Length: 403
Image (cartoon, rainbow, N blue to C red):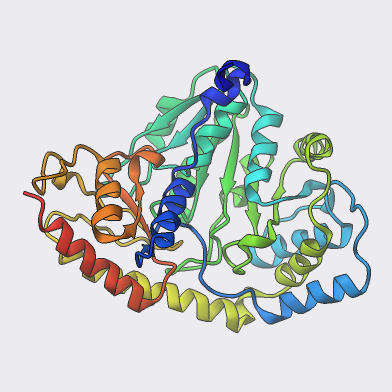
């Protein structure tokens, strides 16, 4: 019996996460004794702040070891509602907040609660890899809106208006964006909100997981525009801004009917999120980010690394680089190398280039095809300045062999 013959059809439609695949391949090379610099994974290289770890230790001592409410402890949901008021000027009741096992589950909950087979979901390109796959699980139809490095990887209101049809149910985007690092300004968000205000049956998922890694100004949420407030679902979490990727704690703020739907769905899939992680997250979201030295130091470190990597990549002929305003990624256009060869390997697309630099330079990056942009690659600068410098030097040397 062939295994694929007995698996559900939905599995054959799903792709492996390319970011996790590159991380796995880099670990395999490391196991062989190679010094691999991993710039593929979206994970802060900082430790979780001590005050958060202390809250988790206290939770264990206080016996937070029983099943929690599916939507999360009320104290945490109230703290998240307070966070939205404090940081974003948004009013939510705790009944509109659902806590999940990571922002990825939160996203899946919302999509599976809203999208029926055949519904259209509008997604700007580049997009985070799991958007596409979650839409497939819901049997929706993704409608991709192209962008380019020249537009700073941002869509226009005209593009959005043209993409919306009577089948459109949902729009998903992130700002700051993974993979491009692009950040929509308040005026740009207002222009998109004006389009959604004309289409009241279209919902918006605003993925704001990189909210606290913003280099230019305070974070702006599309939910701030009152005419569409009841159309917006905010997805956020503690993984990126608080260096808590392994704690697996995300959350949404949504119209109450959608929050209840996510609660119902989650109750049949995972139940509530980890109780100790919830108490740790309570300490995290209760912290005013403007008063947090940990967050300030992390943000400043990422900014320094961004500038170092941009300078080094601009020294590589044919590498087109913009200046992202947030997150911790660069998304250069590397189409200059298509059709070139070092005599052994020919580069036909971003996947070939990512494989080439992993094998020859031992630098792990992610092909842009994973994010809908086959002319690009994604590099995470969640690494030390020394590693970033070494990686860029390796790339320059190996890419210089392509003719």
